[in-house]
Image (cartoon, rainbow, N blue to C red; front, top):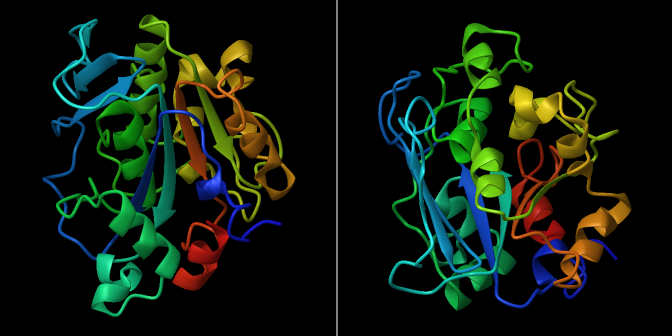
Length: 257
């Protein structure tokens, strides 16, 4: 069942899988000023190749895609799970947090103690994760509806870089009513699904077929994770507004995972 140890999202294993759980928080300092010209840098390691790009490369210049991996470990599969709005000591039991499962994952794996959100509120962070820029979004809005989301609408994004490197990808959204749904239907919120903010994804049927509801008890995601034949090189999962701890407490998110 969902939430039971051994049956939850974070318990499903794929050979050589890196799981990144990002906590977007309003309680830590931001990395820098907001605005469409804020420089960001992302490196994704998949299938022995590094895709490295900055906010500048998403604008005018080409990305750096290296065929030779950098020094260090490489991963064939990356799964990003985005949780929300909690400070590190809301999570870690070592400093009075209330998330024993996430604490155990941090202890057994790794913890990025200098991670910072790009901006507040939510939307700019999700755009930053997938296009290395906030595009100046200082408020949440639907796709292609405000000045900043119109900038994002025509921007090069992570999916473009992955496909250019012949890597597969898929995005899973809990409680989303249909593929590439760009509105709000609680407990799903478009602001937590960055893929619908890019025109070359949202208006492309074949790409939208890869921005999918995660299914009842997230079984679509779990089924894909069960085999290297069905898992994509890069996967992005957004739990719904309760399970990501945005509207519910830490215990709800920790139990869910």
